Image (cartoon, rainbow, N blue to C red; front, side):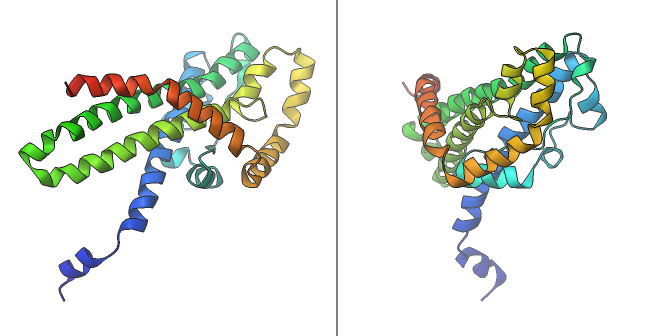
Length: 234
């Protein structure tokens, strides 16, 4: 049996399933962290830029455990972008805006991929690809699944990061409304928040609530996919 025949007879489903989860997660995490760094830089803090974090290279942003959590539990995190809040004109407010940039970027990503999903589904439904060459139809199906997964993961990342638990983005937005002394005290305990988060994610305590919120948000944004579908299927 030739090497080509061996390759054709291999079961690629496991590898495909992994790629279908990992690639969307990398897109969501990379753009999330890049948004933090870009907004911080725009507000006067060049710490992320000097650390080489203003990049689309996912390797610079990956936290291994966070990526595993993202793939397995649909909620995870990346390696935090370094930010020096004291380089902002208004430190706490600058920190809050920088933190909020991550979840907002994920909402934009979700909207873009939902639109792409709608367009691809319109193409798939209309069988445009089948008319020209049917061999590309399975590729459209894979792209559909990838777009849907990316949109959902991006929304889940936004919802997860808006939790007011340090060091997630929601905590930095909330802390901006505290006094300076209270802010400094809470920031000292930031490292323990990550331990709490891992315990909550692994135990499944957050899955039900966050899954419901993410599903609700996904349903609310489904009109974007319907709009994309209408662009190509009439």
